[in-house]
Length: 392
Image (cartoon, rainbow, N blue to C red; front, side):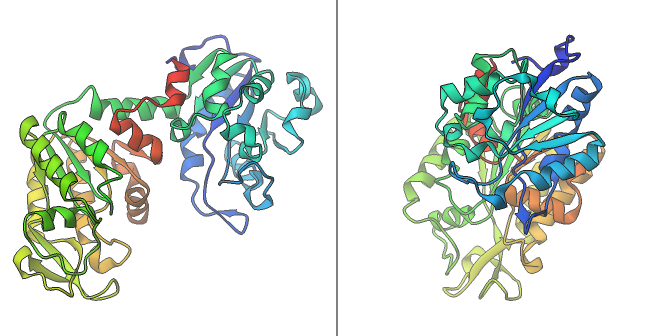
């Protein structure tokens, strides 16, 4: 995989740039610009190199149909303001754009092709569609790591027809993930949450052989609490997971990886109730486990204190209610505190965890925060991502 930073002959070249601009839209307005802000360095770099840029991206799941509410128009307007360049959204049918000389029709530095998923050929990974897109540019750049687990035409097929490179954000993403999967500085700890073990079993199994500690929090921790003979009341849990938990515990012993789950918890009778700290043997049948308790927080602090690398994916509790956000907030602040003294390298991923950090306004206090979602998780599983493979 070659970075676009290493290509020296970019002057006046037409760059076909695949981005992930799939930001949340509410009544035609962007409610979170995080994904846009992250790709600005790549765009600024290409602008300084005097290139012409054609952006390929998508919003939502239009399933091959034109959906007005999923237009890239508001995103183009946001980019125009932030980059201060001449930029135009091209709404004409892609198949009617026959060659790369269509830049001559416009006086813009950047053209954005309308939502690439308005064409069902995109998600079908259609080779002819990709070849036609490739005919519009001189060089292809993938800076959409978060889409690179999809074998779609604009991700997987275009590199067959053009010199292809990775963008700056994709480089950062892969480098950060390599630090927690391949080029590891030990001791290394994973704090992993979420409601379902089955969606993260392959991640946990892949990381057990590499990590020193795996700390299970959130809804999936309830399955571990129950596995060891404790009542979890009416807490959320995934059904039929005894064998999965047993497999994780057994594998961790073989690989000498310590599995940590809550020693005490914060409970309530409902999601809107007040918080009560309880030991595991005190949980009643009408309790809901909604956060980790102070003993567990202290245990996690001790592990963070001896770690040199941290991966965090999934909040510790139901943080949407401030009564049950304490565990997640304390973990975030402890990692930030150690980061200030360069004690370790920290990587955070997962929509809920990033949302928590955004609410706390501390995203910039971690070494790397990923918004990649599915691609982030599949990389942790050890899967080969089609978009990365295509660049190689």
